[in-house]
Length: 556
Ligand SMILES: Nc1ncnc2c1ncn2[C@@H]1O[C@H](COP(=O)(O)OP(=O)(O)OP(=O)(O)O)[C@@H](O)[C@H]1O
Image 1 (tube, rainbow, N blue to C red):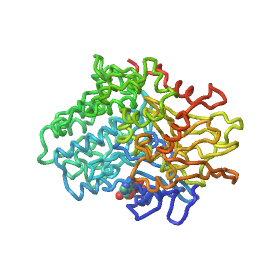
Image 2 (image 1 turned 90 degrees about the horizontal axis):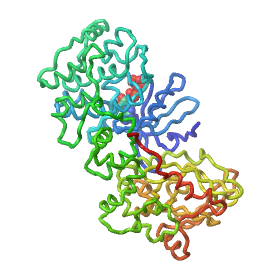
Image 3 (image 1 turned 90 degrees about the vertical axis):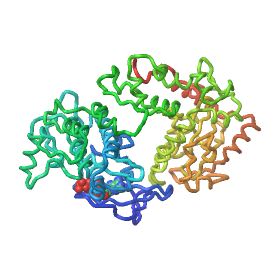
Image 4 (image 1 turned 180 degrees about the horizontal axis):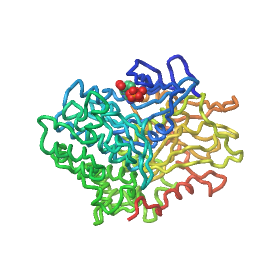
């Protein structure tokens, strides 16, 4: 349950109504700390069943799928904080602007199909694709699939039987109430969308449901005037009444209509079927890292190269470990011959705690993943922080009385996410979910946030068991905290008071990262070291095991 204060849901302040649907009201909302905008969908609890929808949206992360930030509930309503898309529905956009140019249609169709392909990879079937369920940001020329209310999971080798969707977008096999496969049915709906974008009309209209059904079942539509032969051919293939003969997503992406209209790019779109390895064999983290390394490469072309039989540069790296340990690559990327920061043959250097702390900044510049972090991950990680619950809902974790380091680390290509932390004081409690990410290689610098947005400073633990260096003011250390969007991010200095669950509090010194580095240097302190009690429990022990090279991100 969430505490509601007037027009505030959690940390979101509600603003104007963006629109109302049959079951909901959607309001613009602003995050009280970050200023970020969201669309909060308010659904009366009594008539919602959104479990599956929430689950799917949580699982799906794609630039063309509306992101679900958070969910709250009170005794009356459910509140879904969604990514805000300033242009509203594609339906209204097309109504207002009329038919789009073929080039624009291709641009948006590729986004739609890419997002749909992402859903299908999880065997999710949307089942209600229509202009009204696609939101558009006309400024960035991006569309997002929204509303997974009718979506379902289709197990392997099975058929769906639920008759659902929206009249004009229903595939013939759905209209005929025969068991159907969701993927071709979704492609049919995309065909209807394709037609509508080209012509500002629906292909299967009529004065009654019966008339519409007849047209759908017969695949009877008038070709939009002035549309190219390539567009006509693609329409014909997408609106094929026989689902087994209907064109597939990879085939659409390689259709001459799409290829000829796509802006010149170095993306190679090949039919998936021609690739020997499944996309599921490819680790998205590796792809993201490669995108960084070969800046001009699109993720699509990398994924395709990884799926190929023949040798290529991309396939050289069998794992993320290999990738980040490629000395020549690191040298090339950094234009440096500096050896200190390059991990040695055994991959030991990045775990070295003896490293000179003054090298921290140098290392950060050296680290090729730094720019990745800035460009790609910052927003997402920042979001994680921003969507941390408010103080009243913080979960506290009691630390073990013997001060053993209690770290729970999640591997991330850029570093480690600290989800629980070392003790600050005996029997101290601290909120665990506010810890952020940081890089840890080539030389380790284990960082964590302390209590949220406004205190991005290093914490030194009183028993010196470990130093955390959140350092949002230091772009070389933790770019994720270094967003201009975060007001007050540098405001807290001096000491920070932590309140415990049972009402006691402890005060912890805070340092700027610069001061921290100096302090480490002058005291000969190590940037981070073992828990002090039990070496097997040390940070480095845990990190080393996370970085073991056995994990192969894709099987070749
Ligand atoms: N993420 C968003 N960003 C901007 N506007 C949005 C967003 N989500 C919804 N809206 C606006 O709110 C309106 C209503 O939302 P939505 O269609 O999701 O409600 P609904 O109850 O699911 O509707 P229905 O059940 O009738 O399809 C939309 O028409 C759109 O203009």
